[in-house]
Image 1: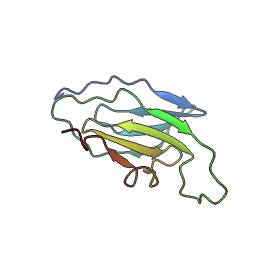
Image 2: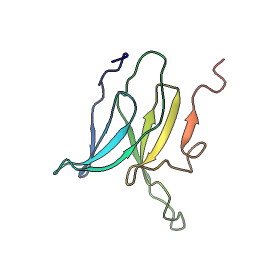
Image 3: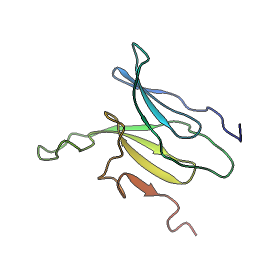
Image 4: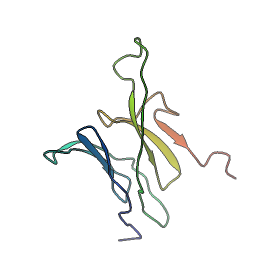
Length: 111
C-alpha cells in the first residue's frame, strides 16, 4: 500500500541471505533454515514511492588493530529519504566508521 512495492533481488553471501523490504528494513536469514539472524530498521520514509531495489556488499580485510566493532563485511542500503547506510553484515549494526555513525546524507549540497 501507499506506493510500496517489493522490487529487490535478495543477496546470498555464504550461508546468509540478505533482503530488504519496500520500507527499507533489512533482514539476514539462514539459507538452510530460513531463521532470521538479525534485522535492521533504517526508520526512513519517502514522500511517494516506497522501494528497496537491493543491497550492495563489500568485504575488506581489516588491520590487526581494527577492533571487534569494525565492519569487514558491509551491506550498503540506499533509502528512499536520500541516505546511504553501511550495515555490518555479521550483526546488523550500523558501521560507525562510515559517514556519520554509519549514515551518509545524500541530499547534502543538492540544492
